[in-house]
Image (cartoon, rainbow, N blue to C red; front, side, top):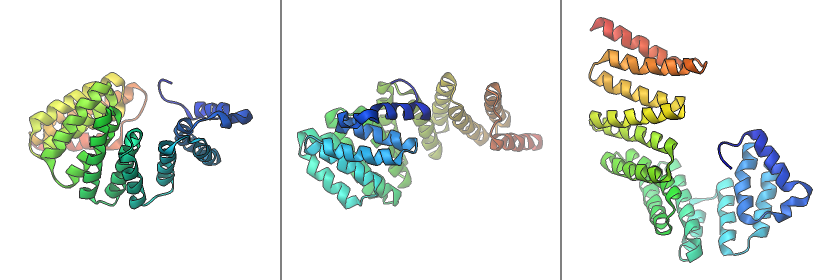
Amino acid sequence: MDGEVSPEQARELLDALVEGGGMKHIDTPLALRLIPLADDVGKEDLAAELMERAKAAASDAVEVGWVNLEGLRRHGGEVDEVLALATSMESNQQGVRLAAAAYHHAALLHHANQSWEEAHALVSRSLRLRQDVGDEEGRSYGLAVRAACERAMEQMTEAIETQMERLGVLERLDDQEGVMETLADLAHLHATIGEVDLASDHLNRSLELAKGMGDLSGQLVAAWGLADVAEIAEDWSTAMLHLSDVVHAFMAVGLPAPEQVRERIKALTDLADRS
């Protein structure tokens, strides 16, 4: 299915799949994919029913493991429980993807508790497994978490290397939105260590992608960053130009520009008048 699924389409899809006793024909992988969809449209009872169906239909230890991981995610399982699942599956040739997903989830739990080193170690372990099985999409998620840990530990050079690796993965996946966001993140990292020219290059590329996709949020993030770079050089007019372009982009689709953009343009105007 291409594109976004609206809430109405999601409800219709779920109803079509489960009406008239259709639930019994749903296997474990499909049930697990449908659970987040049921959550998104507020069908909590159906999500619970799908969990039960996923459990009942599981045909081997790996499918049982995927059901258990989903249960741990949904019900706030402890890190030790998630790690026990990961280690039990790591030696199972068919369970490597599950082990990688479990290590990734354990890393997220540590990340939420600001236990950066533990999170970094676990997501790195997940990434090694995902590399072994050629899971490029999974690697893109894992690299984002690893970069966030490195940034939190103020390891900026390592964070840049990780984000560059992620950029390559996303380009191979042709994930334009992911490339746009990663370029903006890279720009922020380069700016943090004073590499403003590289930051500017990444932001310009991110901005072009955002324009091509009609992504207003992406345009705002990139233009805001370019305005930051211009301000460092005390080039107030260029900074205002970037932000004014964002205002016009919002106006072109009949939306008001965020108030903070207008406020910043006014502040830049005052700076230009005083210089």
